[in-house]
Image (cartoon, rainbow, N blue to C red; front, top):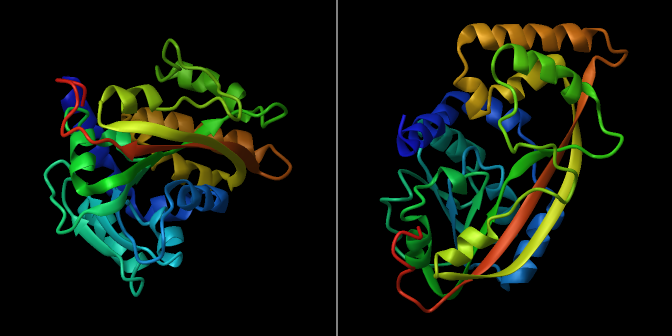
Length: 274
């Protein structure tokens, strides 16, 4: 399958998991939002555009800080969940594709939380540039798994099941420690449209019971796209192993990398840079 077709197929899977996404995906640390505001010089009342808001995990903390936010969400079910979650906050949720959508007014900040990698790399930086005021900012971050020293050994132990069903780690995939998640700074600057001004790391932990952890896995595109027999084998083994634990739970380490970039004066980046 062509990479663009595969990206589109996988990003559509999130629409199937709207309710679960809001329950089991982690909230981002307050420090991330505090730093974002400080690094960009935002003031209450400023207009922000969020790319791929899902159910509003990254929207609510900024709405509470007094910003006017327009969210662009591709999934109809996710957009509906976001409207319900953000009712009364003044946030506008647009059901549509960021690649094709055009704002009514420019923003001081365009941001994407665990969503930027789903946007077409051929146009995403141009669309963000066009949506911003001169001197505005682009901010990108996501939530990924990290493996702290002394962390839960469950994930290493479970790897044999992933290998058994043919879903083991790909070459080059590692187990990043806190502070080791990769960032997009090279990609951002290669666009020729933005200058990276800050990169910050955040790490935290969340405890899941068996059902909750399986529900979390069902919000990840790779697990949603698995054949049913693979999910059944994996989830049965997760339940069996956690049932043997005294607390019947697993500790998952989370990390996020906030990348902030200032809009440049150029109208477009190098050809093919995205």
